[in-house]
Image (cartoon, rainbow over all chains, first blue to last red; front, side, top):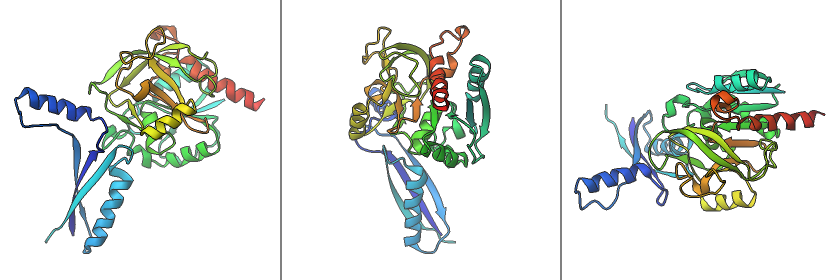
Length: 84
Length: 233
């Protein structure tokens, strides 16, 4: 069994009104180090396979078929083995 | 003339549209449940507003996998007319019948108000009853209606005059201030390359009788009806 932790984010350059609102909140709260904020989504999925390569292939497909609209989104993920 | 009005889970404008077509414009209309794959026997299919599957994941992202979508795709391939309104537009984008994607409104707020729209292209089956440059008053109601496409696609839309309606002011000027949500190039409605699938964010079904404050949406449906009638003649 593997567990995938997937992040979906807007491609660089695509306007992100939520991120902008969060950034302005950070500024209002005097978080002076913050230089920007982008919002995204996080998903977890458990995959019933013993093969890491199969798990990776499946996550790629999941991202492309459903989770990310390729016009504006990009995805990244980590896969780790779940014991027991 | 037979309209098919597609109902997804959490569609909420299907009855408004049914009312507009059946009671106000006196046309034959039938609801099509999203589990049905068959879309035969209609002259025009309408995908309506609402929050299909609660807008979970992304607007239209899950509606895309409904059985009826196969029927919608076949209908489009045959060159038949498909109109997507609001969430219906978002679904048509997800399945790739229309370009681009909707981002959240710049303000992040749900906007529900009358806006002005300029008819940029009257030579479509959906706008033939309007004059070029005519200014319409039609309401919008959405949080995710900020039209976005990649630059090369925008260029293609412009070259093909496919941005059919654009947000404008009362005098028809297309300005930053008259853009309610940050939509690229003030775009409110887009037609596909073959000219048989239109997506629009404003709700024409909500302004077809004087009681509702405007009748400017009526000609969208009347254009469709007269086009189909000409074809059948």
